[in-house]
Structure formats: structure tokens, C-alpha cells
Amino acid sequence: MAACSRGLAWPPFDLTTARGAAPCPHRPAPRRRAAIRCCCAGPDHEPRRRLSRAAAAAPERAEEWRVDGNKPSAAAPGRRRASLTAMPPLPFPAPRSRRQFKQQDFYPRCTQRGPAPQSRDTPPKRDTGIASEKEWGINLLDEAVKESGTNEDGSTWYRESGEDLGENGFRCRWARMGGQSHDGSTEWKETWWEKSDWTGYKELGAEKSGKNAEGDSWWEKWKEVLYQDEWSNLARIERSAEKQAKSGAENAGWYEKWWEKYDAKGWTEKGAHKYGRLNEQSWWERWGEHYDGRGFVLKWTDKWAETDLGTKWGDKWEEKFFAGIGSRQGETWHVSPGGERWSRTWGEEHFGNGKVHKYGKSTTSESWDLVVDEETYYEAEPHYGWADVVGDSTQLLSIQPLERPPGVFPNIDFSSAPPPKDDPPGMPPSTPLE
Image (cartoon, helix red, strand yellow):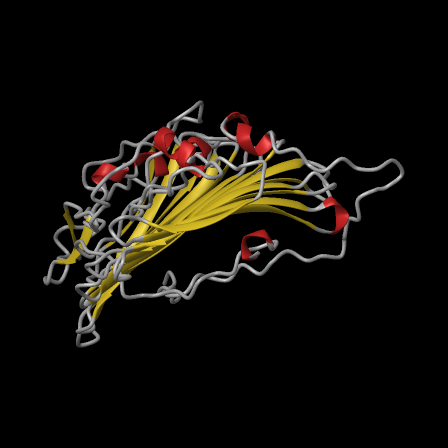
């Protein structure tokens, strides 16, 4: 059973995807908690930056990137996105099923010898992050089931469930279901699983895919994992989501990969990689956050886009802070089809004493270098941390492993190396800070 291997096979990545204007969406703004305040006011003539992730646009305010077509002017040193224009986002309008079923209505159809299962599958939505356990509604049966049939309209369906066992107390309970129309033009599949072993490892996951008569197709995978770190002995929870959608009517689509990692001492890591295309435009976005649980914070964002005609543009920034002292730096850039490049780089040094050194320059002879009186603000702790993820992972924590016989101990491999952090397909390297 493919769903019960340690890692599901990653489907081939299709880069012909989603309807909607070529976006470079911002990620959702986190809720602010107790943090260190810092000053944000500077002289009127000085370029100002809004760099905190808390100031990022919420999903409903996600911006689209379009080329202005005009070279940025030296007369506007305060504009960070001189080569970009914010446009209202257009969602991917892939058609939904004609009949929608409530989640609670679906469970009875998963009983053995019950009615045929109905598709809950709809295309994933962009920039929605990682869903919760409740949103997925995973409901595994205790008995093995293998059924299939044909409906009155000629569409077919199947439903299977079972349990796989392995070494070291490995146990995987799974269920899968699916169906298609009589002519095969529409199709849906969904798989659920939970895994455990004697080391304390627990995993809850789901995967679904579908296509419609218009040729649109989509795929989504969700997973959360609980395990004990082999070296620190700390409990860790990791959550992840991958989503992609492809348009059947045009060369358009998108892909997103989100992840969150937490441990019991406050260490937290979050990030996302995104890619999209709409006919002649393509765009990419990466961002990350790292909290070491002792006060150090690192955040960064890198966005860029290009057209088939050769126009390229982007924006990136990074901030590092510890105990009120840190730095920020960034760059906005634009390359014309003829290869002419414009860029503006900037930086801030926060000394922790109410003084901030600000500096920058551009290829159009802009420059500034001054020290201002300004407080420092940054998020010293994640807006969603260990206590939050534990409270939202009740189904994962309730997974019951096989009973371990007396005198039998789990086999832990301390020689295993962490998996390589490869970029997902379609994520070329961006232009580095200059």
C-alpha cells in the first residue's frame, strides 16, 4: 500500500497551472504577541521600511505583481516597489462538484456495505497555509473494507480500508476511496492514514486529487507528525501541506509547499515555497521564519517574477534580532527586456539603545546614510507556537500504537542523517542581494 510507506511518493510536478492574474502573493499576517517595541518614525526625507512580517498582507489582501513598464525614478527614493504595481488578486475559479456534501454527512457513507462514497474533493485554494485536523475530518474504520460499484448515472466508485504492520512496532491504518464519471472526464481520489511505532512516532495524513470535465486538475497532500528528537530527547511536532492546481483551458497553474516545525522548548521554524504561471508570466515566492526559543529571530522573504519577453522584477528582505539588537536589509530590482538593470538596496542597524543606522543606494544615484532616534520593533516569539500546535493536534496525539511486548525495546538509528532540503520543482534561484 503506497500510503503506508514512510513517505508517500511525490507526484510529478506539472507547471502548467492556475487561473487568475499572475500573482506574487504575500503570506498571512501573524497575530502579534508580547514583543520588543522599537521606533518606526524617521525624518520626512528618509526612506522608510515596513519590514515586519506582522505588517504583511492578510490572504484576502494578497497583492498581484504587474510590470509598471516605467523605469523607477530617482525622484521617489521612498518607494520600495518602484517597478511593481499592486493589483487585486483573482482566485483560481476551478469548477466545484455540482452537489456539495457536508463533512458530517460523509462519514456514514464510509461504513461497510453502506451507500457509495461521494466526492468531497474540490480544488485547493491559494495562500491558505496548512489546514487543521478538523478541516480534513479524517475518520478511519476499525475493520477492513473493499467495495466498488456503479451508480445509476453510470459513474463508478470504490472504497477500501485496512491495516499494515511492520518492524519495530510499525502500524499503518489507512482508507482510500474514489470514483469517476461514466466517460472518465471527471475523477476524484482521497486517501487517509495514521502511522505509529514503538519509538513514539505518530503520523496523521491525507492526500486527494481530482479533475473535472473542463480539464482542470488538482492535487493536495497534508501531514502532521509527532516524534522524539533522537539527540535532544525533546518532543517535536511537524505540520506540512503541498498543493497544486492546473488549468485545462490555458497555460496557467500554481504550486505551494508549506511547513511548520515546533519543539517543546520553543524552537520554531516556518516557511513556504510558491510558484505560479499565467500564460506568459511566471512568479515565485519563498519566505521563512526561525525562532531558537532563546530570543534569536531570523525572518526573510524573497519574491520575483518574469515574463516571456524578458522583463524581470523582484523584492527581498531579511531581518535578524536578538535582545533588541539586530539588522535589516533588502533590495528591490527590475530588469528590462533589453537587459538594463535598476536596483535599490537598503539596510538598517539597530543598536538596542534607541539609535538606528539607516543606509542605502540605487543605480539611479540615490543614496542615504544617517543615524536616527527610533525604537525597535520585532516579534521575539512566534504568534503560533508549541502550546498552540499541541492543542490543535488532539487526533494526532490520540493515535494508539501497538502494545509493546515485555522485554522488547524499539530500535533507534542514531546514524540516520536528516533529509536534504531540496527546493521543490519550478523554484529557480533568485537574484542575490548586491
